[in-house]
Image (tube, helix red, strand yellow):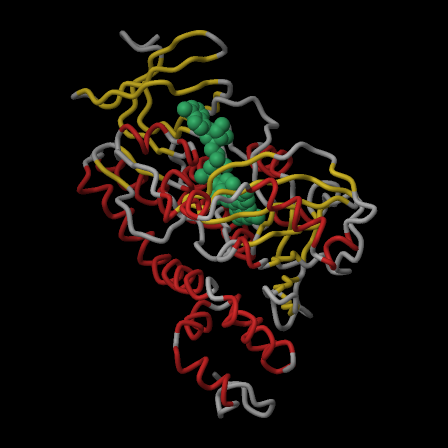
Length: 429
Ligand SMILES: Cc1cc2nc3c(=O)[nH]c(=O)nc-3n(C[C@H](O)[C@H](O)[C@H](O)COP(=O)(O)OP(=O)(O)OC[C@H]3O[C@@H](n4cnc5c(N)ncnc54)[C@H](O)[C@@H]3O)c2cc1C
């Protein structure tokens, strides 16, 4: 007991998903003590596609290269993945390796891992010297008082009150901190709705565990995915823009089941497959508009800050990136003993300077793929041209290259086979 409070802390991180745990790991690396709490008991499930991109792997290497070594050494929980297949609305596909030259790589450039395993693995990496971890502890109310933020919690049925100087909102899409302090509201035009079901025994999976994005016309600009997992299982799901659900009267579960049953390729591949879980859904807050990410005594990270890539739907890498920058600014704030909005605002600048152009590019691509004819055309061209496939591979690993997809000149060149377009002898678009 600390006066009228059960506990006093400088930093309280609410949520131990990838955003909260990575904030804790980066803070511990700087030697800054903090509290990390989560309402769940781990291991716990989280509805996701279970894909871990190159961005996640790169950030883990920055944090501690041993992390990726541990993942590689655990094939029961981590499946190495070497690329991605895009299947256009007309059914034509292209296969893009994650990296052009993989010869020098010590491990795969991407992985898939069920979130029940991945989040538990990540939580086990925390350093108890700096992180006071409290699970089964739910934040139910948050109040601003002159001394800081008063947190009302329920810990295994018992009410507690803590005092924090600053709070990191890492509670995901339904973050209380984002709703109460940042007054964030749901915006269906900047939100995907997704659902996921685990299957086993799907045939014709890629030998190098490529993840598959099937852009079926009914889901555009969203897609149906098949992500391979250990034990001959796969994460199968579908995501669509939330605003389209009402507008186009979409029933997501029916759409997924219908695609699997009627699409000729999928129907063949799912012939002997069996669902091994129920269907679960959740929301994906997209980083397609800039929002305030901090204020007086708080920062938002991960889904609470709505940082999911508007085209690919990836959020784990950006959640970890936000944790890295949050830790940097929090360490400075602790040193100055200043948790004002002015000091924490640096976090918004740092994160958006790094991420905003990438999010914008993805948002532009998301808007382009609403037109099936254009999408079919690009995939057709790339499909028939091996050099263009290489160029496209680098596009999905290199943001500057990806920016070219925004340019009308790119499509003009592609259309007329001009220099810098689709010609086999010159693909420097
Ligand atoms: C269908 C779907 C498919 C997706 N596929 C992918 C994919 O393949 N790859 C990818 O990179 N991203 C994917 N995403 C996005 C990804 O799941 C999220 O971006 C990621 O989980 C964000 O991490 P986070 O830590 O911000 O939030 P979360 O992972 O949601 O973690 C939040 C944590 O906060 C805790 N919490 C919440 N409220 C409280 C409270 N009041 N008190 C205490 N604790 C609380 C929760 O228990 C939870 O543990 C997908 C999302 C969906 C919905």
